Image 1: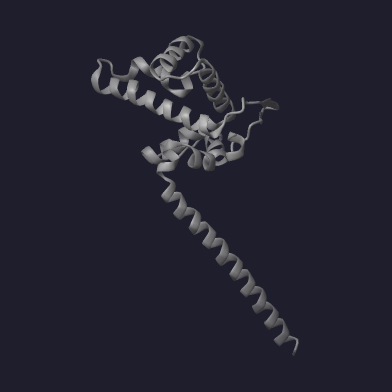
Image 2: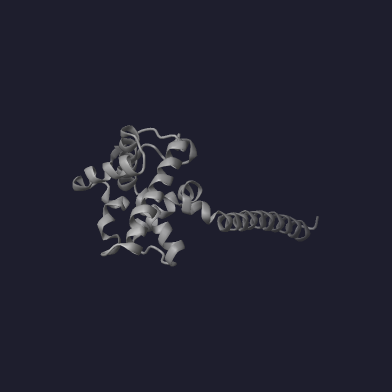
Length: 186
């Protein structure tokens, strides 16, 4: 299940529990693939080939999924064009709504802006959501997997810094003990 790979399934927002339908890692990967394919098939191709660009497919952006006027057209695209079943579509809508309310969607948006455009979030809420969900986003999303080698290096540097700090503390403790012994005449 997703909760086994790091997504807190019962977030609390303003004192209210935000339960989520259990989703397997395989379902999550499938939804990610289907969504990326939908963006490619409809948005990117429209930008390149249709008059008005991708504006006709704004409803495919995750923040537009919960809007009532988008539900039927999205359902049709997801079932007819992208091959999801009714149950999968219901789970996908539930997941996206939950991600929106819990801050995961905001974290994803900030993550993408950093690595696509070099723009860091400035709003405190966006910074907090990114910090809370960055590891999950990096480990479990398509784009996160693309920057994995960079994260591996950053994580190794962090681990090495911790080792150095521990060694410095041990050396300092040892030095202080030897100095104390010398000063006390032992």
